[in-house]
Length: 459
Image (cartoon, helix red, strand yellow):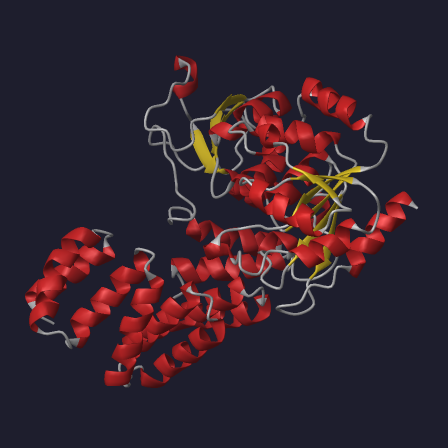
């Protein structure tokens, strides 16, 4: 590789894609078939979300250079991003066949990518097998440790799971915050501790189940959360000082709250307080605004039938949204189980889709209350959910808020389920009010179990 391409590689690996492109693009103009430049191009395209274009580059690369292991690795990563999982697995195995003797780094990358692939598919045993292979060669590999940690957590092997999962703090998925150069909190009593939010809003809600434990242990707790959760968390944990300043560049905290002794990522509280099954109570812990709840209940009093929340999709592209959804026919099967006033809990505007649904299924009463579900204050959503008779939801934030409030919930769990829902069974330790209904096979949802659950509640 030329000196210029080495520089481009270093820039790309540090996320400076625009600067790297200034080197790679003119190089490709002169040498459009240079495999090293094409590998860099495919890497940068995939990292910038242009997976389809990167996929085409990688296909060309593997055709021209079938013995290049890295080309197959990049193709596998592109297929993974596009949710072409069978093709991704095949590409990674082709890569393994082409790895040169002594190239441990590439082999560890392939093992780790296979582990991540099976994690996304909810196949935790296979994911752990490949992750363990990576760790055997590179015991401190952060991504491999993260993957293996999630497998342990899915199996309820809490102590080892939290230990390995901790390796991902500081990654793009689990950004590490530090306020005054303080150490990570390990559960020491007394002192001022900041608990900072991480990942999605559902993850923050789930982790909040451990705030009460932290408040009892530490001298003073400050919660740095998503601004949408500030009011809800402040009411639910009055002993803590709650700020909705997650990701803020400037903290508008009181002066006395800027003296910090330790900090910790919110989900990592499990390494202190959730080391065995008995530590999970599953009890509700969030307190909705009583006025909002009364307002909604006054409205429901005029419906003369059960009022049930429903969320029929979940996730984003990267978290298998393609598999986390019921289509309209499956929705109708669920909603016809009992006569009810159905309330949309979709977090994006679903007005057009609801209009289409109601035109086709005119006997089903489905409504969106956008002031509650599209609000930037999750207190509005919590007040609505707390007023409902129950919730039916695809794996999504709706499951977390229902469980955190103690509202009974039937949750649809796809084959691509995440570790919080465990590897099997119909319950999860975080919420005793949530019942899991697992997808039996990809591409097919049998909703009869949820229908029976609803009928039993209202027979």
